[in-house]
Length: 273
Image (cartoon, rainbow, N blue to C red):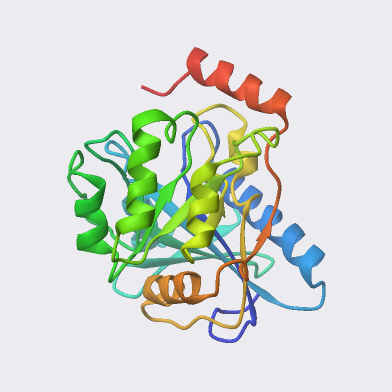
């Protein structure tokens, strides 16, 4: 539905992964469908821009695979992939002229065994440095997010996240994800972040489990006002970090306790190696 230069409504999922349990067309179809549903519920008359932040792990490089497909000009089902902004952005368009924008990113494992998301980078970043190192190095130029994860913010690691919230001089965000059970209501670091003016960005964070591709882009942020190209990743950073705490609209919902338990069981039974 048009481009990010003209649309006044932008939907963004800041935490997505691709796992080969589904085809590329199935993945893109699910992402667009979820965002289209959310946009209609928010404002049925407003055209929208759909943005996915594709996070690579130490062993994945799907963004490069999509760049290779773009260079070949081969269709992916009903979708065509185009590289923009010196290979730092992908635009996907299908036969119905629906559009998805895909930004690259890296999911880092820090020396404290925390996850950190860095949006807008294509190069591989070495893992296992302290979280503060990555925040200091990248947060002035990239969108940096510390995402919530099951058990990752408890005990000593939770105290590290709290310390970063209280003491860091750099701008970053915290991340929520759809895999958090709705019954898991209290996350102390979220309250600490709000008190410090740090935004919490929802993301779908699909697990490496068959069928989880249906969750892609099902939990995210709605931004009013247009974003510009080129340098879309930096524009997104400025919008998400510059918006007053609590004024970023979220869409989607958390897992039920039943779905949370089942997902955790399946994750341990059939992980991708």
